[in-house]
Amino acid sequence: DGGITQSPKYLFRKEGQNVTLSCEQNLNHDAMYWYRQDPGQGLRLIYYSQIVNDFQKGDIAEGYSVSREKKESFPLTVTSAQKNPTAFYLCASRPGTGAPYGYTFGSGTRLTVV
Amino acid sequence: GQQLNQSPQSMFIQEGEDVSMNCTSSSIFNTWLWYKQEPGEGPVLLIALYKAGELTSNGRLTAQFGITRKDSFLNISASIPSDVGIYFCAGRPNTGNQFYFGTGTSLTVIP
Image (cartoon, rainbow over all chains, first blue to last red; front, side):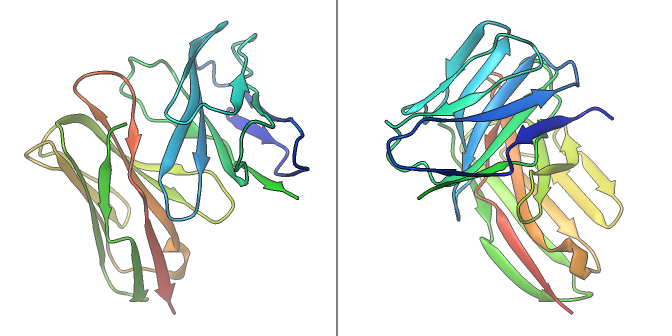
């Protein structure tokens, strides 16, 4: 079955460390996205990518970095510069940014700073 | 970014009751989406709306694309315990390709 796989499900980070969250999709979607979710808030866009080797900052990109070397993969690195990284992170994809179709989401990664 | 106002923020209802929630924007949208998120999981698409006035059902769920194109509504009839979760609206304005998300409505169904 096609879908989006995020790993790990739970991740613990020590202060000052960088950590990378994995996102893989086999839907052949061109566009991929990373969102951050905090309690009581909506989904906030961190980064998105419309095609391989290209990505753009979203509303809260500071302290995060991404890469898009393959169509199927869009990993997110939470750097030590991100001061409040504890949150639920969601990866999503769409056929293309121009398509009216909605997002397909992964099951999320919960990151906790210890 | 674009702000979507979703209300109510939370609801506590008895099993069997109907539920209504809505989402409003400050600008005209050409697409509205409704998602459900269960605890610890990613959101799952429930209903997609593509034109003003459109009314679409998915089982006990019905959503409408508002005539003004600045709002959308989701109704759940005869709620059951498995309806528990957070319901998000998402909309795409006429300009640009990005979708924006509401802050969610947390639904609790009391058996």
